[in-house]
Length: 283
Image (cartoon, rainbow, N blue to C red):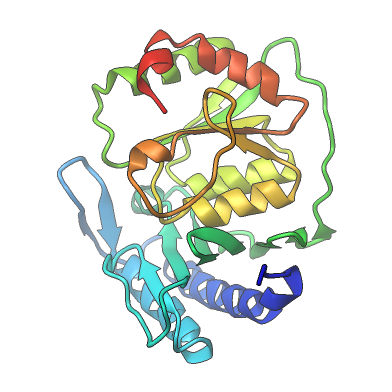
């Protein structure tokens, strides 16, 4: 049976409550009430706030949905109930850890529920401003002032305002990533690299930026952010213009995307096509 939006009201309430509780914890300890340590060889970090917020969110979800599978960023391995695995929660307890460590107040909590790999609930909470955005598949995206409505705006002559993300596994010398990023920087008004993809997704959903490009994006935060944007009227596709499904399964080479409102998407795809290595090497 195909799920309907009403099927996920309870799940959305769970996610919102968990994200806001985690946000209160993060806010109480930022900017100097935490410790940090390196995470991997490429300069990433993890803080004790990541771990504390993750445990809080996982416990909240487990209490309301004990049979569901949960995949959390820091834990890594899925924690499963006795269900069939079709329902999977994705938890990014602190998207923007590197920002937190340098005292930059750009970080959020992200939670998604996926069924058979596709997101049906997405929630992002910003502890700094206390704002929360949520979406259910087929039911729209909601923020502090109500439902987000698509609003077309003309692109300025100076070019679009874009955001960029790439996965942790992408090397600094990756030729496709370098070519694509350089092309976007040359042809856009600004290219934001926020170290917190979920912040970029909420900005795109609100209409604050014109587009978002991801290269081999991380799996844990993609479904929640993409659902928020799509339910707010944003179109997601691959660099060749074909449809893009924001799933957490499969290799990271399947998570290269271009996202913008329908009236802006052709311009953004044209920009992406100007990066020669992309034509031959990126799905």
